[in-house]
Image (tube, rainbow, N blue to C red):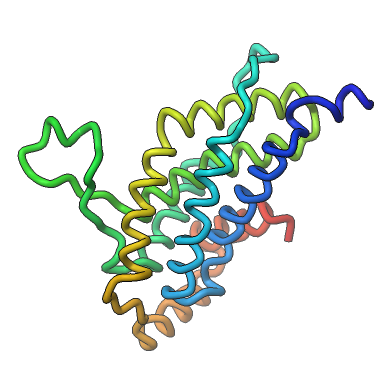
Length: 210
């Protein structure tokens, strides 16, 4: 047992990353509890912390033949993406300043905060749920995949999105939400019990252990 708890998956840098990753996912899963302004301001604080902790993750070697299990289904991703689009509203889109596809584009490349956040969530949630299994080999390989994906994919999306969040937080931007629109969305949610989206909402609660 002592040998297992001394494994690198229990190291300080990994535990701190798990803590921040869990906070990131929990914030997205409970975004309905925050108004747009508070949500944006909270994500503006989490993004740089998440980047820092991910960049400090240790290198590990693969221990299992099979790839880590995926927990976040396409339907879960789409549900979260839609909710983020509604939450961010007109502030979802931003102009990219660094994107590999820019070299093939004749005009500006537009990014999406909702898409960035959902992409990062999918990878982090899969990692967290694998980590919770508590088997060193599973935790190790989930860490390996998450670290690789950070380096190759969502790390860049994280820093791109942070630029947009910085502007929304400190720029002259009105982040207020239309009260009537919020009330209509609430009523719509109440009327859609047992709909596919409502069922997915319950799945998100299960993810959080509610």
